[in-house]
Length: 259
Length: 259
DNA sequence: TGGAGGGTTGACGCAGCGTCAAGGTCAAGC
DNA sequence: GCTTGACCTTGACGCTGCGTCAACCCTCCA
Image (cartoon, rainbow over the protein chains, first blue to last red):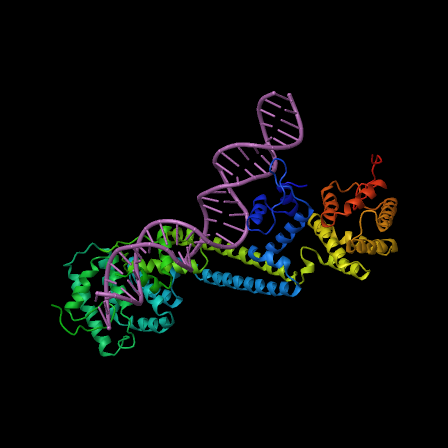
């Protein structure tokens, strides 16, 4: 008669595992000896080895019991189910590996490659690190909402960067972000003027999502994001409103002038 | 300001998940409004999307926090670790798939193919199903102990089956197992005689593990297994002892005759 | 004004054991 | 007879990433 430790060693499992199998009813509790120790016979060893074999093959414990009593066809059927489940799991992990491979740089986190190249271009035209960081956060919001439209949106953005006014704007904003400028800095006025001007041009050209997109949330978030990152952005928003535009990011004329 | 439901919907996760991230400290708890609701700003949305992106890529939550604050090289290093862990996991599952593929029939459970063919041969020489079942259990014990020796052991066993005495023995034992024969059945005597004779032959031929194997446990288990499956086997063991052999399965002469 | 559809905390459940905790038991050497 | 170390006992929490009640409060709309 074997003790639990000897049994476990023979089958190549831990003592804790054997007790667990008792607990879930996979392996029947054996008789105890005078001192309360479990004492196992040879059939228990055979059962335990069968259990371990199935468990090693990836069969969940909850199904091993049924499988041990099943006839050949039921058994084969169960094997099929387990195998396809394993296939799914593997596929899931493969997908994870692909996704993780695309995160080599922290830069690409939660962003498609086209956005990354756009951020790179911003750096080149002289946007500060902090500015680029702010932009990245904004694009994360946009990419999460319209992942399938990123290509077009970004190529439109790239085109806009041919406009020297926009380049000037980014540099201005960078400077403002880095400096400790306060609410009545003259640069603020200049930035607001450029932004209003650009909005005007875009509006005239019929750009923007306008009527197609009935989803204000991302735009609200973009505005809010700017303010959260740097509270002085609130002043910019106010100045845009004074110039007749509802938002920083969205083409939307205020029907009524602000009171 | 967003409620938890709106936040979760934007990032494509469940409300419960967001609360969980709060609980584990991944996402900071936001301010509450007058009625105790959590209210989220845009930065929370960005954080949550980043978290989801890493989690979807298979990064454990416990590491996401560090990764979000890491610099590029630390980040890349962490990515490496995660990826190799994913590789290991995939490999484990692939192994499981291979193992499970070999379990098509319940017959092969916990046994290498050569044993299966041996069992098949037993069937052909007229061993009963119950007898084969008993043999299978025995081989499970042996295969678990000496998996790497199964080839030689089984080929030796195959050779022994050329001996008509052994064939006769298996048929006798089958008959005894199936019948309700009791302890003084004359067939028992005949079986014991054959077994003793075979042992004698094997001993003379110098077969058996003899001195190499200092591990009695499997043999004890084999004897015990026979008795557990059919208590009448105890009588057989006694008769073997009377004939000067210690065990059913192991070549071992008793130095002293039993008292 | 009432009901639907949000929100709140708290707690259990899941799979398969690992890992204390706080002892009782056994075999061996002194 | 005593100590020591290895092994046994039950009980309970921990891990991972949330899902799913339960019991209750808040908001908004017809």
